[in-house]
Length: 430
Ligand code: LLP
Image (cartoon, rainbow, N blue to C red; front, side):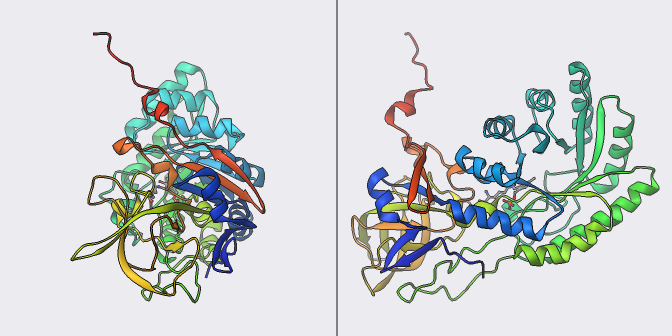
């Protein structure tokens, strides 16, 4: 089990490192994202130790707060991006351009221009048409664009269908047979430098087999490329390492989720995948997001009301789908715990937010220690794809973010204000 040392209970009170979670909630209000610096560092180092000769490009899409990016940059990470906005954030958070990759099926011309002007490490090509567009833009800028070509290996990652990206019917990458011609063509384009191959089969993958299958596929594919006279130097294997969401904090006063879930340890991933990929002699890159930041973050909220209907118990909190959309979007499970364990009693309830949607739930039919109006609750493993997917739906204010470092803590994003809600709108004159 991945250790979750940095969020723990002391005398039935939840701590993040040396700081009581309640203190942060009281000082900055709720809902609030809280991150453990030590956990981020530990996660990154465990990956780095397992993949010592590879480059790790942190996938910004999981969480792009600059204070978090600064920690990862200092540890030696690069940045995997999917928009010019993310490239902009990465550059402004200190990442060197030569450590930034840019993927995505629908890059705009302006975004490609921005990437080429900034001389980033690679643009990952996802269609035959895109290759020509990138060459054209590079030519106009009098620059050479370095590229990887993303292939879609048609491998089932056995994860939620919405985050499975490597099967035939998904929009990502290029069909491997068709891609041979794209590789060939890239060699003849004046303003393109081919580095290698990119693939990413999905996210929250907890079985190593799909990764092994993908590595084997790449090995064979590179042999095929060589037979066609194409020599590459680089493999970007993508991200996707899954983490644990259930029973991340185990305590005698917390209900244990019987239907436990799995995680994929980086050393298991490395032991199985590296020997295959290393046969190619290529330089290796990985793009993990979730593994690095998911369990390093929680979101803390307050119980506004408790309500019992004939059919259900509801715990109505100030955390809604606008702060954490994963349960509404993927039916994702997050462990929910009281910030102070007061009662031995448990109940089964739906934990919901104030948003006017029935899909606005954080958990359904969940066994949870009984909580009352005014109590704080924490939603665990919310560091990845949490804040970044937040919205202003129902004119809600995006939450604040705090970074904990032992007994010190830093506000790393202020809570939005009413003024923010109107700051970008323009009133008509008539
Ligand atoms: N590389 C590429 C090309 C990707 O598309 C992704 C994630 C990653 C790397 C990082 O994957 P990770 O290591 O974090 O699994 N919102 C969803 C997850 C979407 C993942 C999108 N792509 C969720 O909340 O589960």
